[in-house]
Length: 257
Image (spheres, rainbow, N blue to C red):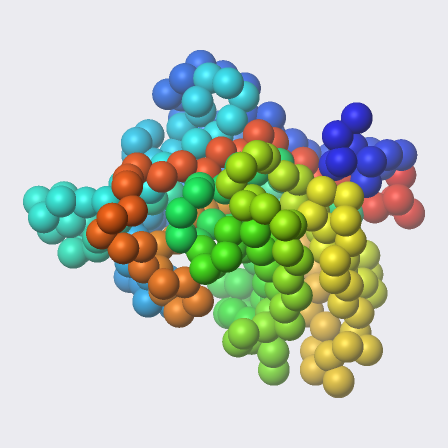
């Protein structure tokens, strides 16, 4: 039993992707779609997200590989003068969830990038961000590879959000870890493996809106540079890869658990 399984005991699995398939295969289009572009994504990021297999494909060993490439001058011109190419996968329009246990087993890239596993409110196109809400299950900003950050964003606490961090004592790139959010109507809890390191409830918001009571969708991505992450130096070798072993969503214990 893995650490993630400990948290999932007695819960009903409602959605998952185990990323099984031949090497070089595309992510399952019934579960994921690509968001593409290179406009900085609101954070002055340096990458262009593509829908190409070079940036997101199965590795044939049960993982999704999100691969970041540093671009030469010709390719940078093709991607609107972005310096890097990466991928951003979302379940928007395909799958959404209200409450439950949301987790992924991920091996982070070993250098200073900005990998993330997170959630956004399905109503983002109607109400915008941050009114839709954002729950960051896992982020690492590249300045300390031992530290995972979990954050909630909403109206009045959009930037930098209400955030907490946990130091694993060694680089999170040395081996895969399970990153989990347990999301209930009036509480969100963050875990690294089976270690609870943060919790948030409406009383912690000092009267600001609790916007985590509706359906959210999932995101996986690796950004480069930006507001919260320094760009990698020229000595950093590329490509760099984030490996995702699984993504699983379990129903809340109070609903068919």
